[in-house]
Amino acid sequence: MKTPELFQIVLLSLHVTGTALLIAAPLGIVLGAWLGLARFGGRGLAVVLTYTGMGLPPVVVGLVVYLLLSRSGPLGGLGWLFTPSAMVLAQAVIALPMVVGLTMAAVMGVDANLRQQVRSLGATSWQATWAVLKEARQGVIVSIVAGFGSIISEVGAVMMVGGNIEGQTRVLTTAIVLETRRGNFEMALALAGVLLALALVINAAILLLQGKLGH
Amino acid sequence: MEQPHVFQLENLAKSYGGREVLRIPDLTIRRGEVFCVVGPSGSGKSTLLRLLNFLEPPTNGRVLFGGYSSNGRGFPPLEVQRRVAMVFQRPVLLNTTVRANVAYGLRLRGERNVHDKVRKVLDDLGLTPLADQPARLLSGGEYQRVAFARALVLDLEVLLLDEPTAHLDPSNVALIEEMIRRTNRKHGMTVVLVTHNVFQAKRLAHRLALLLDGQLVEVSDSHTFFDSPRDPRTAGFVSGQMVY
Image (cartoon, rainbow over all chains, first blue to last red; front, side):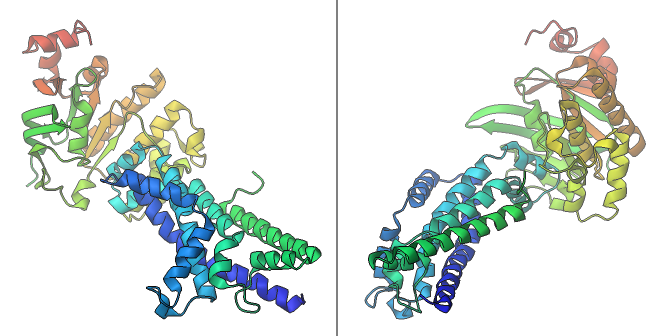
């Protein structure tokens, strides 16, 4: 494998996972905060579904997204199958329950009296929710880190909906599978090293943002 | 013309899960007074404060405040609600510095001169040396003083206090009580204080109400309440004979 090709694979991995996280994180934080704070009929079911979603096998997500995007599927008209867009969609679906579930747990961990007390000081309902989210910020950041971790290392879904097409939908994980199958263990190991280094750098960056590194 | 009363309660009732915990047919809280609500635990004192703070709607009846009504259909507008704030028995501060906690309510209101106002209140409550400390590192007394400061810094019409000194040592109790007196005298702020401490009520109150099982037993001025109560249950409560 040549260096430009490796660069392209790394960049596509970052692009797909980054975009999926940009979709899943804000949506997941809002849904998680809502599940953590609101009381409504069917909440228990929503929580069970979220927890189940956190353990959803990526190949199942891949299969469902594949069927949705296939030519005869309901979203077939988009023409996304075997493109990075399909990979983004699959990864966003995998990361979403992770962000929702962990944000919900973090929000539920905040003292339930806080909300009423900031309301007493003049906060609107939204400002009170924001205050609770800020108190839960460590847990919310962990939810993003976990969401990232669940998709940067994911192979089953991106393989199914992306097709591992050279120069188009090949990412680090699918390239590792391919090189291993070919018996190119050195290359597979090198790619694995790049993947781990990437995860390490990004997690360290998130921790730096959190102001926690070195504490 | 300014009304002589700040709160007027009419046929007020509050129930949780079908169980009525508070019923007040009629009660007026006058402008500029320190009004103490005493009674044993579970008598509905904190529920009353939450209704006065518009944190919960009454199940029946209404609370009139500033020309607006808080009832089952809604609360007064936000800017009217913001003229009232409460210091809770078990306060929860934000996980940030003391200064930011005290500034919180002012920032919500988009106020100017936040720094000056915060500095003054921190100084009044002996919190200046702790201003930049994280709130989570404070002792119990300091924590409660910050909770008091974050309400006191606001330009309030009514300050609601729910057992604000319940877990404090005598020096902190004295400081908070002095601040309540000073705020009430200097700024004419109406104070509604809930306590089960009869001695504290006697030290601070202009008028008092005894609440038992969600019902008002007696409302009278401090002199009458302590020296010649109209209801034998009040006499029992203030003399310490009422075991609860």
